[in-house]
Length: 173
Image (cartoon, rainbow, N blue to C red; front, top):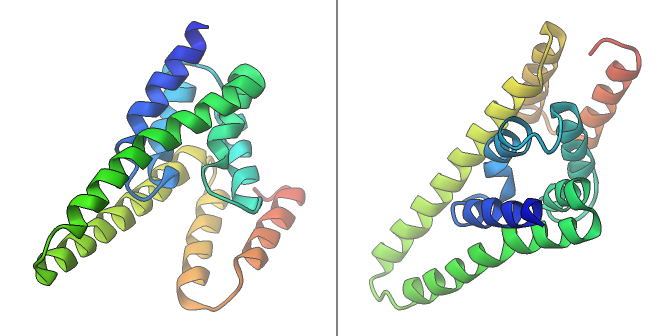
């Protein structure tokens, strides 16, 4: 039971700073789950992240997978609840506050600041995850090539996933 309470407390606290969603918190969640609590190993975390990203639906599916790994169905439910409820309550009250602001310039400033913060946290998260899961030169090259192809081409991300899968099956990464 103490594992469930710890899971609930840690994810609830992280939920309150989840600007940009769960993806912005991935390095911190990785650190808590793998390095601090030792509930899961790094490879399994990476596998769950890949499953969550490949599956349709919300990005926070990784939270349910981690909770399930730690404590079964009850862990999946409580982890999802813990990551969603506190931030939802906070956003409810912040949205009411923002809607009460009459000055359109102040509203736009707040919206742009929040968007900039979310984008920065997501990019920082992507960088930290890449550093933690890339263990070879080939993996770093693949990451850089994927970023380049994403930025400078109109390739669908599924093509990039397929290329990564083929390289993995062939043993290059």
